Length: 297
Image (cartoon, rainbow, N blue to C red; front, side, top):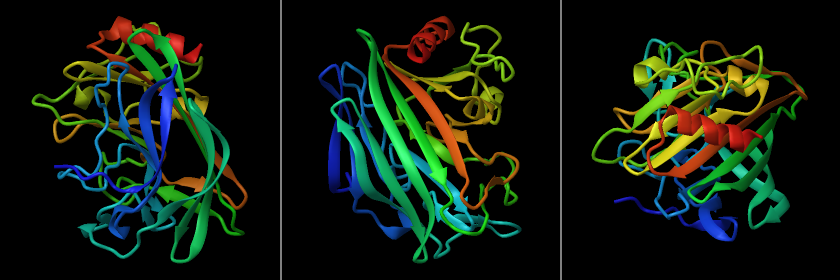
């Protein structure tokens, strides 16, 4: 059974209806890389579409920004992948700390956070989250994060893949969905990196193996009675490959460092924006494409 992490919370609403809870000061074990996160997130009918602290990966926390390697510190939680050694328990966990609200409304917020490890502030984050209604059965979660290096030295963001584990380029925006009796279906649209988002629904792929590790304008996870459609909403975000799991557990992330470390120079900023359609029912490719088009318009 999952145990909700206590802490200070904010309720996110869409058209007056609660659709998510944001824990911005959760009380978590250091080994989980404590960080603010959204859980539960629900459809408009109230179906939960996130999971926290699952037995298979206790460090998975609903919807969050989680990075396994920021200058060698773990902001993902759990073990750290060490080259030629594999997953290893290390005392290198960082923490994302809520600093202050810049805006706080029923349907969204703007928050400043500080990423700390070993008594040092490695990154400052500006996080913007908004809930927008789309139809009677769908809404969109608009999630933007900007990571700034406040120090005088350059740093970089990595992943297990950049540290020697092929195919494990996770780190960045990450959504842990709930486990059900059957694994969710997954499908994607074609990618059009040069011309902006292609949301016509054609030319896409289906299945974990076909979509994992590849950029796509949008990617849909289809559960028993719900659908999540993830779309990169900036040019840089659309270039990031998707990290996808359906068989082992259901989760989707947009990867910052898939096959090479991402440099964040002193004073530099990295910005990513993912818009997620949260829909009741099982959408096909055409239905997913139509809602993405509406969410990004």
